[in-house]
Image (cartoon, rainbow, N blue to C red; front, side, top):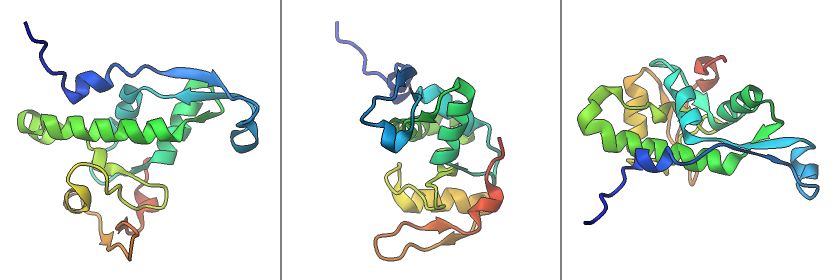
Length: 157
C-alpha cells in the first residue's frame, strides 16, 4: 500500500527545537552562549499573535524566541526557512480554512521589505498587506517592495 503524501504542515511539525552551545569559531560573530534552532510551530505561534494591521520582522521573532528559551540568540537561516514552510502550509490550507490561515504575509524583513520568495511572490503579499491597510513603496532595482512606516505597526511583545 502506498504511503499518502505528507502535507506541508505535517512536514514542518516534525522540525523540533534544538539548543546548541555556540562554538568558539562562531563566538566572534554571535557571542558566547547558546543558540536556538527554533521549531516551526513556535514561529507560527508568534505569527498567530498578530492582528490585522500588525507586523513582525524575522528579527523580532528571533529575539522573542531567544528570550523565551533563555538563550543568547536564535538562528536566522532556520527561522527564514521555517517561515517559508509556514507560508506554504497556509496557502495549501487556504481552500479549506479560507480566512483562517496563518498570516505569514505580516512577517517582513528587518528593513520593512517583503519576502518575495514566499508563495505568490510580491504581488500576493502586497495585496494581502494592502487589504489590512498598509501602504507599499515599490521596489527599486533589485530591492523588494517595502511597507511604508512599518515600524509604527510592529507587534510589541
